[in-house]
Image (cartoon, rainbow, N blue to C red; front, side, top):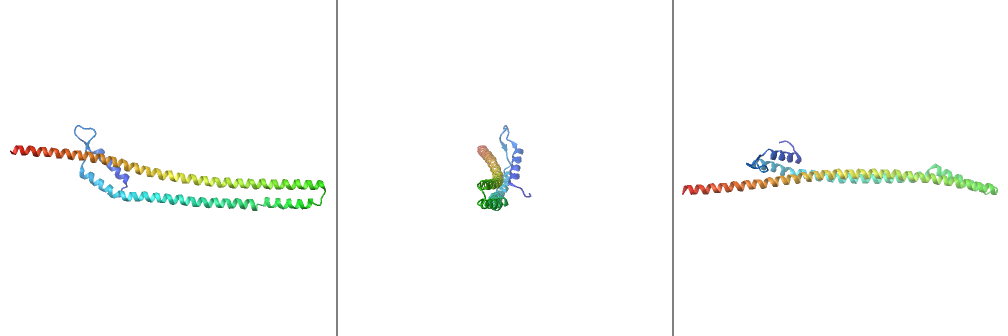
Length: 211
């Protein structure tokens, strides 16, 4: 019959049930060919283990994807932090400002009071400027890291939602199939009981006629 998934087989069962004839004087109960229905249920029962295994494989892959995303995210965060530290500690603006400030302080020791005050002011201004630029670099690095973490969070959240929706759809399909099969089984049992009762009545009538 070709390779069919569980959803295809559920659809076939629904079509099969829809095509069954209604019982006389009933708009809700149907007459179901027992052998054909049992064959379809047997095929479905054989198919279910492989479908369950496929779902479990999807869930395992989901865990692997999330773990890989976490690992990659941690690596990106570490790289960003190292880059930020290198930018702050090795940036030429900070290094040059510190060297110039130290040179001005040394030179100011031999100058007049006015030159000393001016030199100190210039040095403090340069140090303040360098500190401001270093702080700005830190802020930029942190914003960059935060943006990466946010993207990773969105990716993980989206992956979890998609896998959860697939699981819910599978569960819903199985629940609907269970309800449909249970309902039809009860109807078949009612039909079989009715047929057995009718056969018993016919047999009793035949015995009376024979007497």
